[in-house]
Structure formats: structure tokens, C-alpha cells
Image 1: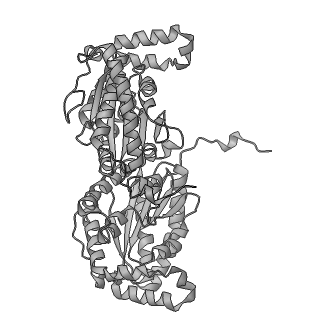
Image 2 (image 1 turned 30 degrees about the vertical axis):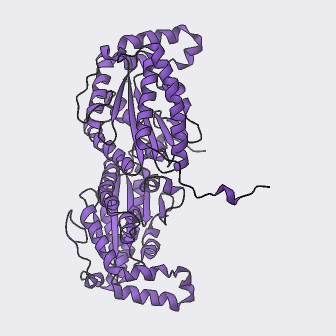
Image 3 (image 1 turned 60 degrees about the vertical axis):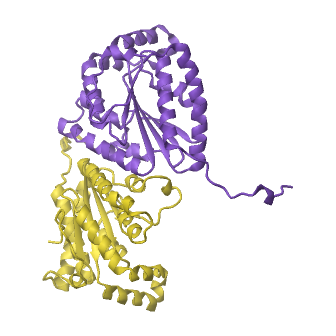
Length: 263
Length: 263
């Protein structure tokens, strides 16, 4: 239900960000714990099988909870077999290559999970809104990205893209909470306020990204994230669903335990 | 004239492999020396400018002269700014990723040249002929490759793909020469004889590659290579042509030499 159909036109209304799809906090929290156990098992089997891999792409406005989702949900995964990569502004070395180069380097090997905390989608989001390159350049990136994801999908990587959707009001509260709590000051970045001023432009860029890049092979999910408990539960549910559909299996083994005696 | 037009049907006749397009040995050798000086200058400017890059892909049957072309032509380039990568059978680590991963890692950074001695095209050549994967898998690779090359081209990399074309008779002579000369025994690989037996299948795979992957943005060149002197000259000519069309320029500088006194 949160999955964006290919070519669907999604409007990121503020009102939708608080949607909980009939769930209540207590039930969602229980379901999250249950899902995390299931994720642990699924990852174990994925790793043992060593055939397919999972790439999770997280995108969101500031404070929507990318870090928090990783801390609350991805902790289900054994870090042996799960790497998180936070994509920052490209550094000098990275800028010497095409913008997908640094992402391709870090895709998950067989049996593993990679989480991209931000990703190459910034190249059609912040880059578009801040006009860091001309329109002819960012416009052709949708195709590059879809074809890059097709390659990965064809080569045994399941791609799950999750857009955490918060409302502008909720962002205001979270930014204020950051200012009020000295333990959160390290997260404060005045640049976030500039991006907040361009809220409408960002929503437009996100909507274009969802319309252009939610494909049959690599769908986008939009997760209402004003309620943290719903966000965490929904992300865990999506991951369980996607990993189960890969149906990883322990490798067949011909070990005959009767054959060995261990001294 | 050696450039394959998009969607053109090329037949790799043995007879064409000895073509010299009206050139004679002496003239071609002089032209090669001249071209190498020009390549040196062009690379210097490309490097100084640091904006665009050049990717040279070399494919050929055994003994056609990939190594030899690199030794005779690419030596024009300063190795600071030119890397050659020989793609062998994928190793264990490489096999954990999609087949373009190891190639993407090694594309040239801005201002540089990369030469691929064999490449991801093996994934639609030897892999197809040896049936290492099923037809549904190798067939979709043409699209992956074209789109990968589109990405690189859109992001400032000029791609030049050169197929060295020798005849089956010429290969026989060269293989015999390898056996006769102890200094060449290290190059001897009995597996080459197996590939020679599948000559027709290989030609078919090469022809499909040329038809499917010679694109406006990343053309294939077929270079008749029975005459080594023609092959070297032709490759140098192609490289001069492609680098000149990039028209690299020394960066504008505002240094006023009058302003400095060096003690």
C-alpha cells in the first residue's frame, strides 16, 4: 500500500505524513519486535546462501529519521553481512568520476545487505533544487539511475527504496527539539534551515523522483514518518516483505554426520 | 572508415583482416611516429585541463595483438595519467558483484586515460560462446552495456572501442611462431586452441557485439590486424582523431609573471 506504482503521480501532502493506516502505537511496537526477529533469520539465510543481495536506499528531508530508522530497525541485522554507507557531499576524489561511481563501489556483494543513508538520488534532489548543474544534466539522470538499478536487479540484487515522508510542521518541532537538547546539538546544522525554506521545491523534486524512478524492478515506498513508531514498524514490514519474496534457502549440504567422529 | 555505424551489420570476413586501406608499410610507420608525438601532446593537455577522460576498450581473438598494440602505441602516453587494466577471468571477490562492477571501479578519472585490455565485452563473447550463462542472461547484457556507456559518456568520458580483426590463417602462423620461439613460450596457452576450434562461434559473437553495441555515443572500430604495422598505425590514428575531437585546452591562468620574484 505504501509502494509507488510505476509512473504513478504521487503528491506528498503534509497531511499524509501522519497517516498510520489503522495501526496503533502498542500494536505497531509489538509488530516491530516480531519483524526484527524475522529479519535476523532472513539475513542469516541470505548470508548462508550467498546468492542474492539486498540494497536499501533511504531518502528523506532532514529530521525525518534516516539515522533513527537505521538504529531502530537495521540493528536487527548482524553487521557481518550488513554495511551502512552515509553519502555526504562528494569529496575531491569522488568528483573525478561519474556520480554513480561511488555508489556502484558500495553495492552489496552476494549474501549481504547494504543500506545507503542518502544516495545517488541526491543527484536529482539537492542538486536539482540548488541548481548545482543545469536542467539538461539532471534530467537525464533519471534514465541513468533506472538503468543502473536494472543492471543490479538483473544481477541478483534486490533494491528497496524508502522515502521517509514528514510534514513541514513536524520538521519544525524536531528542529526545535534539537535546539532545546544539548545532547542533540551535534546534529544541528544551520544549512537545514535553508533547505526548509525551499520546502516546496524539494517536494517537487521528490515527487519527480518517485514518478520517474519507481520501477517494476526497483520500487519506491513512501513511508509516513510523522509518527516515529509507525515509521519504524512500516520500514521493518517492507524489509520483511522484500526479503521473504527473495525466499533465501540454506544451501543444500551432503554432510553425513554419521561419517565423522570428532576427538 | 573503420568506425561501425550504429546498428550496422558487420561481417568479419577473413579477407578483410589484411586490408591496409591503400597504406604502405613505410608511410604507415612514419605516420605512427608522428601520431605518437601528437598523442603525447594531447594527453598532456587533457591531464592539465582535468575535465574529460578517455576510455579505450580493446577486444580481439588471441594473438591479434592487444598487448602489442598497447606496447607500440599506448607508450605515447605518460603513465602518470594512463592506466592499463587487463581483465582476466573474474576472481572470487569480483564474482560477488554484477559483472560491470569491476569495470566501473577502474574507469578513468577526469584528465586521465584508461585502457581496458579485454573488458566487460567478454561477458557477451567468451561467456556466450562457452555458454557460461544462459541466453536470457547474456542477451540482456547488451542493454546494460549500452546504458553503462551512456552514463560514462554523459559524465565526460569519451569511450573508444577497438576490435582487432585477424584472419584464422594469420592466427595459425602466430601460434606456430609462439611454439617455435622459446622466448614466447610464456604466452603459450593450450586453451587458445580450444577457442580456435570455435572460431565461427566467436565471429558470430563479435558480430553481434558490433551490431548491438556500436552506438552514437560509444562507437566500435574494427581494425584489420593481419599487418601489424597497419594495426598500430590505425589505432594511433583513431586515438588522435578521438582525442582531437575532445579538443582539450590548457586551463586559463591569471598568473602574472611580473608579479613574482623568485629568490
